[in-house]
Amino acid sequence: MNITVVGSGKVGASAALNSCLRKLGDVLLLDIVKGLPQGEALDINHQLSEIGIDCRVKGSNEYEDLKGSDIIVLVAGVGRKPGMTRMDLLTTNANIIKEIATKIRSLASRAIVIVVTNPVDPMTYLTLKLLGTDKNRVMGMGNMLDLSRFKSFIHETTGFSRGSISAMVIGEHGENMLPLPRFSSISGIPLITFLSPDQVMTALESTRKIAAEVISLKGATIHAPGNAIAAMIESIVRNRKSLIPVSALLEGEYGASDVCLGVPAILGANGIEKIVELKLDSSEREIFDKGVRSVKTAITELHM
Ligand code: NAI
Image (cartoon, rainbow, N blue to C red; front, side, top):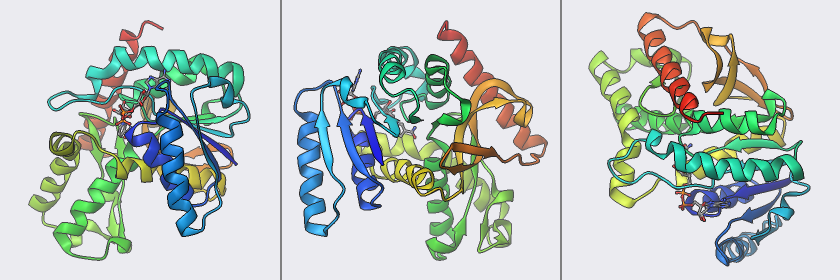
């Protein structure tokens, strides 16, 4: 399997490393900065040599090398600085996505594309429209990362094993993200059995805010996004049919259309193989719909 990561910065390098640690295929790191992808490739290969993993990692500054990619991770672009929201990156990153999508369209039009660049929901929509490919072949990574954070809070609050925690977060990867305690459990036993309403509320609020805290502490989020990307790639490469929330084009699902937003989906060899619809209650629906409106406004601002 040929995996290409476009953007070899902090998250791109972490995605490449995590993909190799899961033995998902050979990885090409692409970037416009001379030397950066080559240096990252050397560094990762050295780690793999010690562990005994035979995936090959290569660095390049040539878009031509996109040819033959089966999966492309699009993670080029600027990240937010302390105090910024993801939406503040809209125009700058849209221009970067436009440039790269043109290359993907001409060199690797059948690749499955995982968009990571923020704000990820409008960027996923933009990529899908520019590529003109099937809607199941383009998805955004955002809620999978939100999910890791929600699980982390549940673990800290209950003290229970991380392995027994199952959780769900959907909606906009941004100000209107929607962690779903009703669809979260400890080994199948509803979360509310173990957490008081106040503790649930704190976990929800913390999940929404924690990325900003990481950014203010260390400048960027790196390891958890890299792992979330690799988990999505793994389900596709191994055709595992894992249920993972991804940003997907909605055409009536969840009462929304012509917008990309995070929803639970089955990921397999064909990319998004099924969107799973959950029955939201009125307060969940309100937040989900706010996310739809927010992403639609951003899409309008892109003047496509
Ligand atoms: P970074 O600044 O470390 O890396 C970005 C890389 O993109 C740089 O190396 C830059 O040279 C490269 N780049 C810029 N234009 C390019 C082009 N036209 N072609 C190829 N490469 C190009 O940033 P970092 O921290 O890796 O974040 C990257 C993006 O991912 C940001 O937009 C950030 O907000 C987003 N992100 C999204 C997450 C999510 O859950 N969806 C989680 C974490 C980050």
